[in-house]
Image (spheres, rainbow, N blue to C red):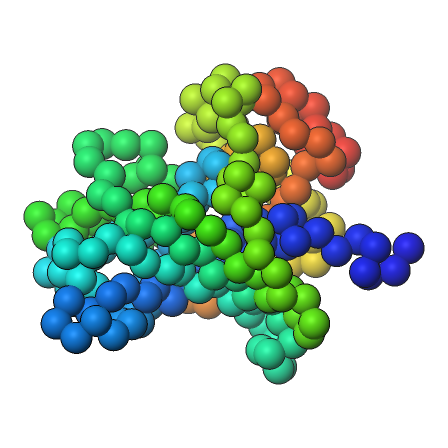
Length: 237
């Protein structure tokens, strides 16, 4: 089977977003109406909706206060020619997340350095409420991915997502298993940890802040409970 037969726009888009540490965010400049670009650090909700931590004093936050429409551009890294790699643009509205939330925990688990300022009064967590998605999967592979296709349906996976903290704690006690999964993924050597769980797979990251790397383990079939997840992970050993 050749690459054209196996290429999946939905899977490629999801993987690009899940593996990214940063994205380019475009907001609408409040004074001039021009696109205003800035760099943000990201994480994802279980369904794939991006989460960002923003200072409400920043120019992009002031733009969003007047017009919440925005886009996030995710780019595949580690390539000699970035034009040959994948990139995906998610378009929607940036909305504030209030309270001590699951999104806060997921973001700080993936980006622990942000804990130094996440509690400051002018910082808040936001999510992109997705409207549409555009993928460039490489040369000659540009296409729209519908919102309902990109977002993962987690309605049947409440037992799994509610147990994420317990699952991460259990996996942290088996670093050898995590190292074996990372090796099979072909990721660089290092001290790796699982930072997120969803029905489709695991998000992983190295624990060292310097040169931090990210990876994604996709399950052979969706898991809706902790038991199904641990059973599916056996196929990676």
